[in-house]
Image (cartoon, rainbow, N blue to C red):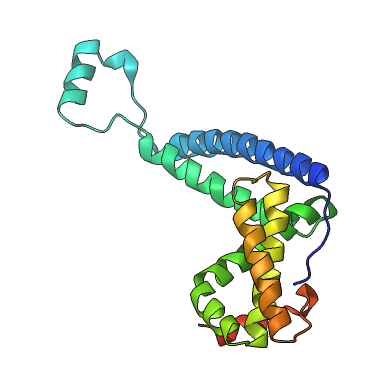
Length: 188
């Protein structure tokens, strides 16, 4: 994966639009699916033939009067539908920045889980480990700037400086463009 320059303002604007659209779509579909499931499968409650006292007695005796399971199933179905919609739209032009950041975070998670082994190998001058760390730190910096995460930026900058010194000590020419996901298979 190659690091791309993306406009922070465009990314944040599109991400906010997607989040709001997702929430609204999820709510509408959950209500619609819940209503349809209740209409199809719930037992109708004949209120005209039931007095309030018998309704209270039925509730106290534990008889089913709630449609919670249908509403819950409606929420699950709406989540699946929203996930399917996002899956279909992820390669569209509108989602370029959002999908790129999502992919970057996925790779960062993989690297993070193997970071101890990668750092250990980098101290020994392993070129693959140095490439992975160069990419990891550069991608973290990019995401921190996109998300306005300035709290940990100083420690990240210190890690970048230490890595650059280690690369120089080993006489290597390392760039982020050298990174491929295949390099991670060496550090399981």
